Image (cartoon, rainbow, N blue to C red; front, side, top):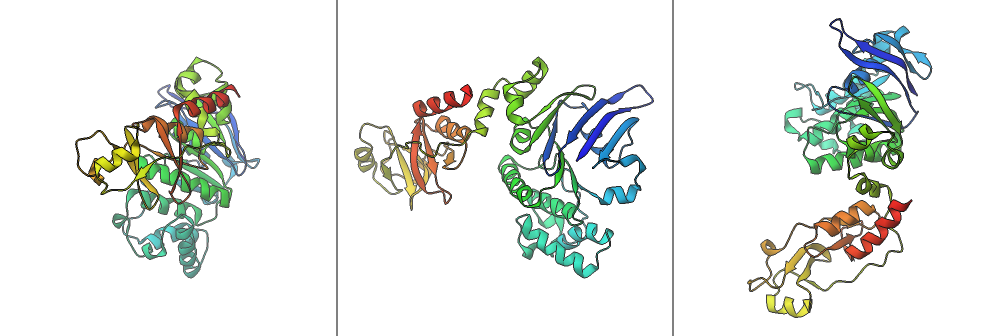
Length: 364
C-alpha cells in the first residue's frame, strides 16, 4: 500500500503545488490520478520516489516512511514509466530492459534472460531483442518501457501518462494489454492521466484533483459516475457520464441478436437489392467476418470494397453496453454488429434493444 498523509508541496515564491493530500493506494490495485492541468498530479507521483521532496507530511510504503529510506534503495523498489518510454537510444531493446535488473544486482546473463521473458510478457516478440528504440513504433517503445520497469520485480509502479503519446488505436491496445498484464503480476500502481475515459477503464479507484493540488474525491469509477460529490467533479467527469457508466455493464449473455441478410464483394447491386428486400443497407462479409454496410440504392453496378461504409464499429459478444451502443450509433442503419472472439459475425442489435438495455443499466 502507498499512503499519503497530509502531504504538501510549496515553493519559495508561494506556489502551492500539492495541498494537504491524504489518500491510500491499495496493494495490488491501480489508482488513477486525474484532474485539470497544473493540479499537482505529477508532482504527487514524483514525491513517492522523491524525485521531488515533499514540503510536509509523510508518504508511506507498506507503513514505512519514504523520508527515512536510502534514496537509491527506495527507487529500486519502485518501477517508473513515463511518456515516450525514455529508452536509452544507444542500447538494444534487450539491454534497455536489463538495466534495472543489473542495478538490482542480477548477473548480466540473468538480466538478459529476464529481458526476453518480459518481452513476451508485455506482448512483444523476442525477435525484437536486438533492435534499437528508433526501430520500434511508439506503442512498442512503451511496452519496452513497461518491461524495463518490471525487470527488477518492483512491488510498486508509478506511471506518468504512459500511453498519451500514441495514437488512439494503439492507446486502446496498450490499455487492454496493460490490464491483462496487471491481472498476472498484481502490482500496486499509481498512474497519472489526463484522459478521464482511461482513468475509468484502468482504475480500481480514481482520485480527482482540484486546482491547487487538493483532492476533490477518490472512489471506484462507478461510484464517481453515480455519486459525484460536487459540481466540480460532475463537470470534470463530463455531462456524458451516463454513457460512460455503460462501460461497467456487460452485454447480457441472453441478448436476442438479430439475423442479417449478407453479401460479399463482387455481388451485382441488383442481386444485393433483391437480397436486402425492403432494407436500404445490407451487410458485407468475407468468410463470415463483417466488413461493413452497403447501400443498395447506390448507382453502382457491383459491390466493391471501396463502396462499403466503414463507419461502423463492431462490438465483441463479451464486451460492454458502451461498445454495443457505439456500434449501433456508428452504423449508417442503426444496427450494431456483434462479433465473436475471432471477429466472426454473430448478429446485430438495434437502437430499441440498446435503449432498453441502457435504461436498465442506468437505473441501477
